[in-house]
View: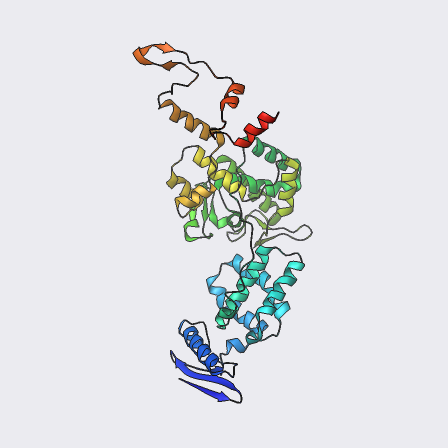
Length: 403
């Protein structure tokens, strides 16, 4: 371990964990050089710093991005691979042939500002920065920006919505009005009767459907716990049969097991049973708008199904096995117990407790003597509720006195 001068600048040369570090400290001051030497040794020990001749750090960004994405393929699901590819394209366009060891904090902030000016959301910019961070971490250079470049603030998503019976009825009747919305309608019926995620529904193949036992097998899901079997109710089974009839009309009487239930069918093009449908956003949006029930995500149908299961007093284990949840905390995130059910629940608590003396209903007093406590008029209750004893705010008291 030594400090030495090359020209007017101090350099450091030391070995750590079998790696040779030799680089400029970019200062001609001896005390500053000693300070930077200690920082570099500390960063090398924690894996933040890299040798001066780190091959990955010297790559051009577009080449490094290609290698980074290729090396991550075995660890990512198919949908995540597509997502990373989409979010990496703006990075590749901006940084291009810039070498990784030439990327500065100012350049990163310039990229963030440019994306913001282009109208991209903070959440989208954060996903792109996540890829950039992964590449720079591999190049042992992210530590230079970690304390100053932070993810942008994103509005926290709220727990989703669960549909009431009348809203379901409106949505179903809306879907029946237009034949072009049939697949979106059938997807809706399957989702509210099975609690399937949209991605699970789109990945469903005919080999995953047992028509004799009336079962759906979810073989690939968001987590390991998502792999499960779901019995089909009459409505869900009829929706599956409708989709099968649709497939037979287009592809013949015999549907191959590897064919998708929700197959690729572009607006102007030939349908392909071997390709998974990307979705039915346009039909779904039109169907919800026609129903007049306000904004509704397709994922809210999963919330609805789990809420209905919870309202029907099914056990937690049954709900989790159908929904593919990891634990009860995740189930509570989805389960929206109805207001009426909560109201009935607290009524049950009231029945188990003695009535207080101020209750306006019949109250039991000493000697089993029945006495009716007179009800206090609302106006008088408001009038007496507060004053200078601070049970009501003093501002209200002053306002009343002024008038």
